[in-house]
Image (cartoon, rainbow, N blue to C red; front, side):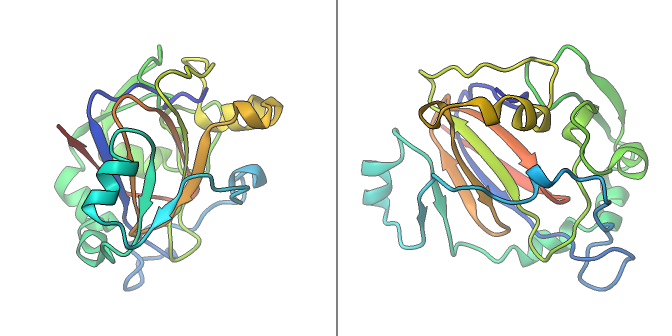
Length: 219
């Protein structure tokens, strides 16, 4: 499957920020730029969502139905206002511009990796996605919500993927040929939503807009 697929060692929670809407540094936009024209149409629209969304989940229900068995999308937990402020382009560059980041095809198993300062990545390589480019480059923001599309397989269903191909390449080349029974669980996560998936689930992500997200691993 896609290059970001890998088995997790711990439980994980993911949540998205909404750092931008338009480019040009206007108030509230986070300073991120408008998406370019090169984004493939196949990556824009969500075709289906097969992960359950819950806005009223109790702890008992979570443990019984999801904690050890399947993913769930949690809603209504946060509006991410503080996170959005901290994730503006200016703040991130000021805090982490000199930090070295590692680019790959977004896969744990990728052969090809490049290290460079975070500022160089933002200023030179943050562009509409290209199936062959390192770093799973994300399009810049075009809407109030920066969605991130997720694909998930349980641990016992090891997907087929090339270590040095991007999620976008997998979506374009492999996904269309999969029978419905072979397709992963999938959904597009919107800003403020939290995706939970259990230990060791394979996963791939595709940023549909410029996105900043947090991952939390639970023991």
